[in-house]
Amino acid sequence: MAIGEANARLEKIEILLRKLGSKEDSLATLGLRLLSGLHQSRESVVFSPASIFVTLCSILNGAGSGTAVQLRQFLGLNLTDLQSINEFCCAFSTQVLTRHRNLQMGVPNALWLSNHMTALPNFSQVCQQWYSGSLHTCDFSEATKTGEAINNWAERKTHRLITDIEIPFGAGTDMLVTSSVYLKALWRSPFDTTLKSIFHTAAQTRVEVDMMSVNETFRVSRSPDFHAIQLPFKDPHLHMIIALPAPNVSFEQLFFPHPRIFDNANYEVVPVHLELPRLDIYRKYDL
Image 1 (cartoon, rainbow, N blue to C red):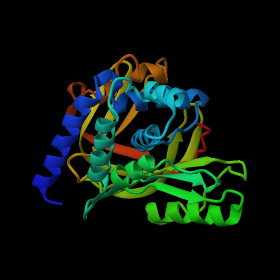
Image 2 (image 1 turned 180 degrees about the horizontal axis):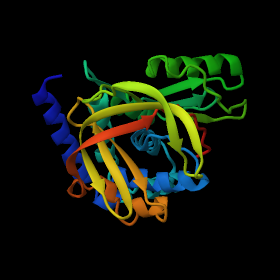
Image 3 (image 1 turned 135 degrees about the horizontal axis):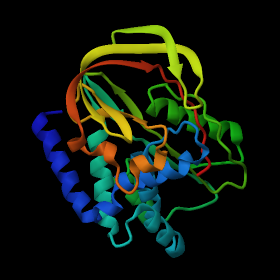
């Protein structure tokens, strides 16, 4: 993808974001609300706000009046017309469907509709035009066949990283939603080595883990409430933020009423020796 083409797509997304409404109703705000709710268990949380947002926007096109109102409230899109919503989701999905040497990324989703139900022609057309033909029909009473179809979709869309999903459906299921995110990116400063080292947990225990390390210059934020570091990828539009709150600071205080860890004004560039544990997280959610 040429740089000029990528910048033009980003500008289109920014214009569509302004049409979607205020900062209060942004995709980032939706992500923070979901994060706050999912974190109530105080366990590891892994999810993609962008993928959930795009998936629910596609469903909004076929929702009845009561369901549509609830979806709009949840998404923060009460006053936004469907055309602008669909244009944004299409532009966003096209932009993140990036594939080059430094970055592969996508937010695939799909709707699985029981074959005893009939989607309105307009809804089928919207899914085809704006959401990459994400609507599929299936027979939920044939558990093996339908499960294989969904797992094949997941395997294909996640480059064989997800091959077996535990899917709760039965003969009485009318619709199933699958949503995923795929990211394969190169660090701008790769970690040098992986060695066994001690990790201090939130429960004040010590465990031996595989620890990655690197010596490099990073953007770091240090305040009485938290320490945070930005780890850039080779793609200039992408970085990871890792934050460590102070012992007396709750998770919610990091993000509400203002997500200070996202404010670049709080960061300075300093040399760092960084050690991080290798992560392998699996979570199931009932949304």
